Image (cartoon, rainbow, N blue to C red):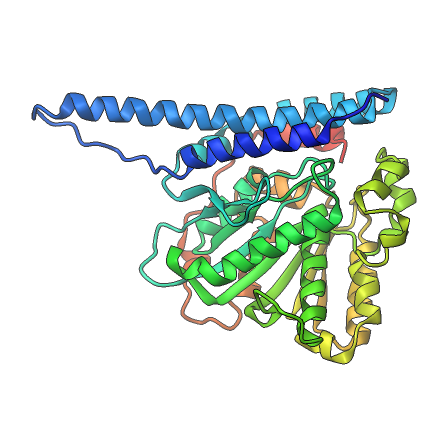
Length: 408
């Protein structure tokens, strides 16, 4: 195994993000050409804006590629990883028509505010997906993306962000340091700081500070749940806080794992080496501290009383993180007195409900369930049925083959 200079990579990633942030926050305008003498200047501004967008896309692509190869250098290229990498490559190629369309939306839509700074650490950035109709304050979803604690990135939430923004929800996709840039304590700290930014600043972007929801997917579901439980413990014990658990109206955990002790061997068999996983989690002695299920079981009644309603969503054919992870966490929460509910999606895999189903077009179950729960006590929102049905982005044969090949 070759040594990894994680400090150099972190500094390089930070520098890249600083550069991309300044480009990403400049909004493009669409100059109206006329017969006036200023039309040439308008063309030059349009050309300059296009070059900035291309440069931003190239910088972010380089960042993700660089971190991926740093990871592979750290892991070593054994047979199992080569096989997984090949499966991931084919999987991505099959879904590329959809990814390209979502990518175009991400980089060129005026409804996306990219790389807003929320903290001082590398990758302390978030993307905002703003509904077209901003005539009144919108509900807000703070979203923590997945990526096995290693390849998480805010842009992974672009498809969900687009779908929810089309239905009148502002989505804030929170980026965070990944391993080896940081360990789980850094990830939870970053996510918590991002949530704090959303709670304290979203009104200036058209969001309703009284309707803020929290969601995480896969590793992001674990990180978000850790941040939520940690904040509830701090708040109930009178420690200083920058945001309150009571500001979160509900938590949605999608395909997450909440008891790390039960997942170490499972992840090892799936290809995430035990020693690497324990390094991500700050060592075996920290597994309980970063297992929301165990924290909830050991928490006081005052801590549990602060928690918002919790909805855990999981596919029954999820082999990356078994659905029993969500089921046992719901049971522990219910026994502790929290409001918790489990939603199972029959026959769905780890990526079906987050990627393949939305790419298929139509009304996918996850988005519809989330919207129903958000609008359950909000009779004034008519966006559930008023928007056009999303169109298909990938052919069915590609989706089926990608599901079969998927390494997740």
